[in-house]
Length: 237
Figure (cartoon, rainbow, N blue to C red):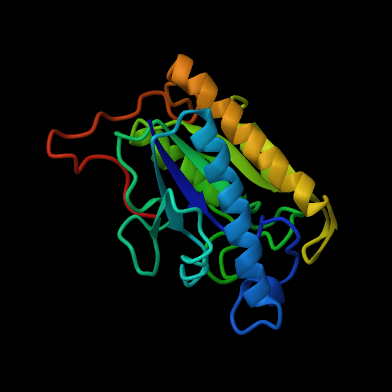
């Protein structure tokens, strides 16, 4: 059972500021360690739940954040940019599920380091008339590729945003936003244990009964089938 992990950074345990997530921030190197360990928690839980193959895509900023020598040895890593499918590079219909680790809320939301894609120029985006950010577009893209999103970790705003899109996605709240650059932090050991447990439970459930991708019916009444050459589906994010 193949698992795909898209790893962002703003929603990682303990991180609250640009200094934590952007080079050459004074705490960026430590932020890379924190990001790698949250991803490791998801990998460990997935493996204990029945995953047989795990692909991790570094999806934040320069996409060179995860530390290969500290990453769980069972996780294959895609590192660097630019990539044709960006935050979902390497995802195809062979995967059983997508896990979103360290995600953040869309631009305009009161969430830790909330924004939509690179920079701060984007104020709003809409998909079929509904406000959307990275979470919604990733969910829609995965659904178009016939892969369900099963888990998301991040702050309370990110978790609420995902729940609004798909109530079937398990969310793990690792911090409570107080402002865009301030949060009440959940103890890191506890947060990672929750990520690991959630990933384990999800994969154990999928082992027993594979899940079909879901999407809000009003937004996606009929997802187009992929072409035989595998090139169908949405444009890269």
